[in-house]
Length: 329
Image 1 (cartoon, rainbow, N blue to C red):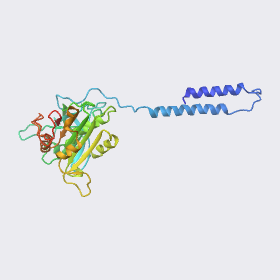
Image 2 (cartoon, rainbow, N blue to C red):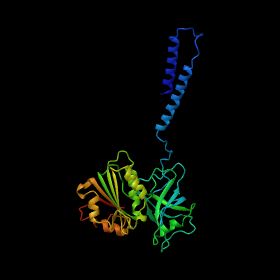
Image 3 (cartoon, rainbow, N blue to C red):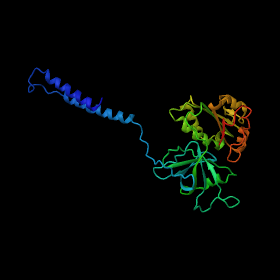
Image 4 (cartoon, one colour):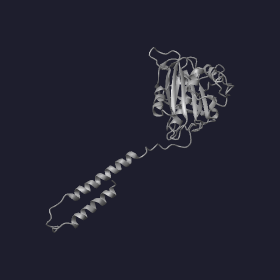
């Protein structure tokens, strides 16, 4: 009951009490009714305000419509903190200027190199800066932060460089670098095949699409890893599956499963793909995304040709998929 309605009710009841009284008001015994009604009106107002605030949508922080990133030039950003993830992976969270967000389009990545004023710049054998692409996992509208999930490879110069950074150190970042312009409900079904740290562009698309109330696309992810402890973002994917059971499913497969593993085992093969992913017969209604180590990508969909997609091959070609249906990150 609103405050206005409660006040009117109190006044009406009080007037009626006086109208039907048979004794002079001066001789009438004092009544607490008006106080009870007034108290009810105040309580009604408090309840209304509480419910109104409880039902109000949370206010999102206002952010600039201009990204601090530059697609043409490298910009230095300070490392805010490092969050260990597992035995060889960590989240590296970089600080963006106040009231800004990356505004990265889905799906896109950035390229990174050592900062311009780095004490020990990361250079290749020819003395040129080492530059590598990475896909952030933080939402594009996340204010003040840009997060990377980095897996350390002993032969990976840039991944090792990440792990040598300390909070306060800087990294040069350029982007966005557009990869695939994903649109909500662009396809009826989307199949994803990822391996290791190649999961990040898949997560970027899924986090974006599944949370859109208008999404009707059915996503299925096959995520291949060596052991269970190598599965990145498993909690996030399991949560998405629980929240969106009609539009998302994930299948984990391991090369070296533990004794207690009850999921799929072995490499991604034709049987696994044909069992879980959308059929090639769906034509333009279906899309298959692939991302992982070069050897895995080659075995699944044929190798990329530099920055080009390259011819379709691997296990997908015999299953009838076309080059238009497959995209390699």
